[in-house]
Amino acid sequence: MREKLATLWAYITNQEQVIEFIYDKITDLKPLNEDKMIHLAYQLHNLYAAYEDLFKEISITFENNIERSAGFHKNLLIRMKIDIPKVRPKVLNEHNYQLLTELMGFMHVFRHAYNYNLSLEKMEQLRTKIIAHKIGIDSDITTFKLFLSENFSS
Image 1: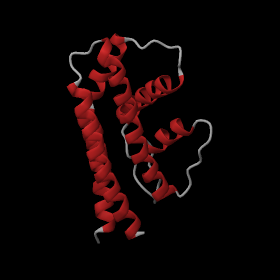
Image 2: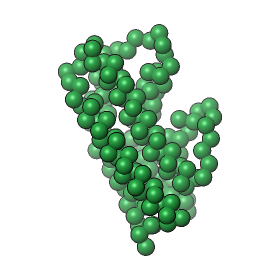
Image 3: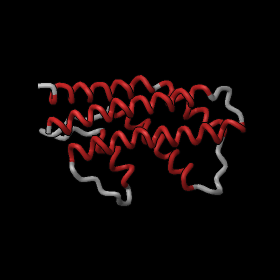
Image 4: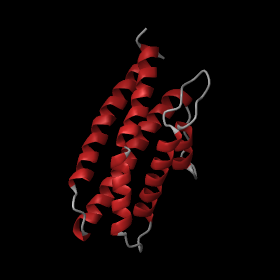
């Protein structure tokens, strides 16, 4: 298990760099206008996908079973907000779980609503919220990495 935890640590560290790169792109798209809105939508989609990839690796490492069924995205996020006794602590607090649930909802709209027109105002609100709460999500992930380091460094 020690090797699996060390591998997960390295994966999370790499994924944090990917997430930071995407946040930089999201932040740089100011001021938002119609031309930049599609690019922002794409980057918000990528941001959620990057977080989800990180969460999948955590789930695979600890739960050993992750089914790609209806509700997969929602169920994966739920797993990240719960402690699994004697296995692992939660990854996300309730507030960050709610924020990422909102981002997941946007990702589904962006990916599947072909006749849907994006709202500049709603996109700006989501971007502002995501940027403002980045530190909290980072903190949750850092706390989880601390758990990993305590368990694979001994």
